[in-house]
Amino acid sequence: MRFQKYGRTYQLRIESADDLNALLGMDETLWVATSAPVASFRCDPKLLAILDTDANGRICSDDLKAAIRWLLARLADPSQLAAGVDWLPLAAIKADTPEGKALVDSARYVLAAVPDASDERISLPQVRGFLATIQARPVNGDGVISPEATTDPALAAFIRDAANCTGGTLDLSGKKGVTEAQINSFLAAIPAYLAWR
Image 1 (tube, rainbow, N blue to C red):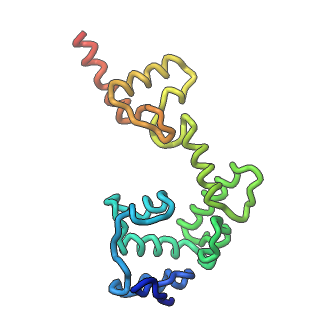
Image 2 (cartoon, rainbow, N blue to C red; image 1 turned 30 degrees about the horizontal axis):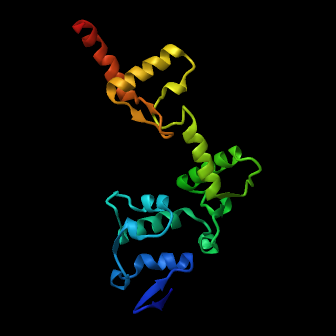
């Protein structure tokens, strides 16, 4: 771990997984900042959303430390982190833990759906492409059923009516549908509506 002078201050240069690990024990008085607004970072917005665990619009030192602990606990070989590539060998994941096994299994599931993919490594573009494909499906596992999820016109009309009466919920693809709770609420309101009519 080494510090380098930038302008008037010395800042830590994180160049390896060992540096990340050392950061966990470093006195926070040596940090340039212990909290900063999410908008002040120039990096992947999805990463920032993951780091901002409490969604308060700020990334704090505790958020970074939690992410580092999570990452290092799941990698058998963290040396790949310093390579500057957007892919990870599956062998670098600790597959002997339940969390690591779940990650490897998930990676293999994604790779099976990607044409001409290597079964030895997974990349960020592959994961994002897979997620985009899943999210565009009418049945995508998000807990929201849209009218497009069925070929039955009567059932599609029922889903539309339930969504219109309960306010509905947007699914991952941005289509309006209903959750189980909204369907139950809609069904519970039908007898009262019929009695009123």
